[in-house]
Picture (tube, rainbow, N blue to C red):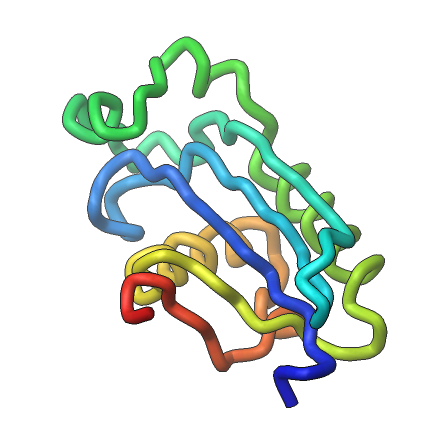
Length: 135
């Protein structure tokens, strides 16, 4: 099955360690086909989208972003819409496998982001994932 699949490689920067207390502040996506050729790309800072979510100073130190940069980011609903467009454009009739470094951490933030955008990430991405931390 992997020999014909696309791979959706995602890296997220977050405002902390909890997808319930901290927002996703940046996302980068590269879609690779089964030959590992790039077929799509997207990246964006994401401005704060819920006043109850906190961006911690420790997270800013870790990801190297400033509050000013994050405040200039895209609206989360725009980001989700643009990602859905990218996924539809590159999927070739199949869902992509999600590839992350520490997938259990990132997927919670990605799911929360798509929930805010009123979309289901699993409409576009296979629930089977590849975790580079494990590799």
